[in-house]
Amino acid sequence: MKKNQILLLVAIFAVSLLIAGCGGKQAGTKEQAGDDSWNKIKEKGEFVIGLDDNYPPAGFRDENGELVGVDIDLAKEAAKRLGVKAVFKPVQWDGVLMNLKNGDIDLIWNALGITPERQKEIGFTDSYMEDRNIIVVKSGSPIKTKADLAGKVIGLQLGSTAEPAVQNDPISSKIKEIRKFESPTQALMDLDAGRIDAVVTNEMNARYLITSEKTADKFYVLTAEEGDFGKEPYGVGVRKEDKAFLAELNRVLNEMKADGTAAKISEKWFGTNIIK
Image (cartoon, rainbow, N blue to C red; front, top):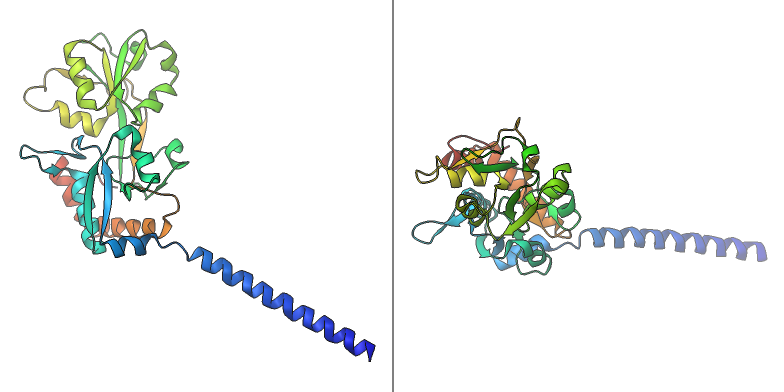
């Protein structure tokens, strides 16, 4: 009799463990499925994009004050395919990651460089474009290579990827001063006025700014052989926990690449397809 009771208790204990194990798996599945970031976007009917609205050709104001740019067009197309509205919210660029993490915005889509430092703080879509941090000088400048930045004053945008790119380069210890500006446009104005010796910024932005009739002959961009501060892949930034929303963004970005829509947007702004 006692033996049977013991066997019965063992059986009950085993069943209890099995049920607990199953319960644990269900809890884990529920926890994994608990990311409702995409559902929240659908319920709102929109996503809010943080950006610097003075960063051509990614996002900037045209002569009528309308927000335009390659990333503006890409974001609008992505929103259309997702069945929601794209709302653009200009922010101070050096605080854009905090705006995202605080929930003031839902994503960052504005020539956002994918860097190891940023990847520790936020999530990124797959890269859709690649750029490089270049050196811009005045035409006729004695700066002919990156090494010539030694003893010089350079300008860059506060909070941009140019900042760590320069600081992490061996030449940094030899640069006389690094001045930080709210925008590359302001840095180029100081370069033109002779208050600084060079500007480090991404090529997409710089080429757009210095190819107008007024500035075409004023500036020179050092070639890759003469020196730059490395390549810079672009991605869309979201909160690390918003994995469901991230998956939807990646899905529509891949669709836009596959059906040629992204290429058409690129050709509109650059005359060629630089979307990868």
